[in-house]
Image (cartoon, rainbow, N blue to C red; front, side, top):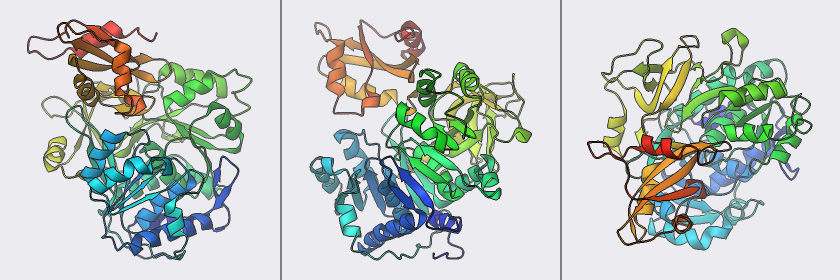
Length: 523
């Protein structure tokens, strides 16, 4: 393989770390088909050569809304190899959302599922995209047809550490979604750090290779930039499931050593009888990792009792990748339920008070971070970028937490969010966006969207609506009206009609009052 010196392209780092036997298995698909490291390299090379044949400029965007598959991972790697920037889009996004994302990032290439071509191609063309191709779950689509005629050998385009590698859309509680710009340094530094901190390197040094059970989506930071990148840099094998399926996960666990998931994965596993899920099924596992949403201490304890494994909880963001983690090695400390652990090597984490001064251990304040993993800013939003960083260059996460307390002073505990972000089943839901769609429905005066406790999803989306005088709306009709406009995970699971929203003396809606009022909805 070509290993250019000084090339900071993430793919160059992957090349440097591949197993000596290129014909060993890299990915095993659910249907039993296997892909070797050579297959991954040659397949992504064909796609990269096709992208290069389009004569795109370095940094041009390749937007992809496709279902999970090994070829989807090849597309991501091919984009990096060709010196372009990858823009993964949630497969649940609908027309209104896609229109915004594509107009905003102005991709040179859009890749979509074959079944959605007729719907997405006009949106892409309206965003001045010159190339629209398809990629299916069963190794089908026009992208692979075009790439099949290309050579397999492909130079890894030289990229500097701070060159753009990906744009990952996140949102704020006000305004439209923001594109977090992630560099090759961001992606590479995080993957290399996790390789050592989570024990992949130690396993490799012992002469073994990990096997990652991959049941996360490839459009999300957790599944793509954490799980996949960590496995690739570690030279680990991946058992790739299209989605989380309890039966398939339990079937695959005895062949794996590591699993990453959202808390919902673990609650659903624990809901199975102990005869189906317990120590026997987990006998080959060395590590279970949870993130993307808070893990209840109760779940942590129940999982250990059932399996003998203590889940490793960690903390990260789309803008920063992984920041903090409970230790893997006991010498670095224990895994403490209710905390997200200690700052990763080279990552700075501090707690700041309202005055901006660092808080002592035990004091609650705003979580601020710095490090090589922290993004450079939001795509084409310089003012928003400036607003989200302190004068000395630390990123304001929007989370609230404290060091110490019942845990050692080096451990971070998150106590809430400074904004009204809802995390449902591991996905971020931003109330302001949903309220905009509800408020546009005929007969609605205003709405408030909140998150309330849910045993399966952690938090469930709930809408509280005020109607115009004389108008009558059925809550179920409001929910139905949102379908097709926004992703299913954003659609409220329940809606309530009330006369007035509670407000403070300044006229601000008191969502804390609403959360308290409806907290037992799904109990």
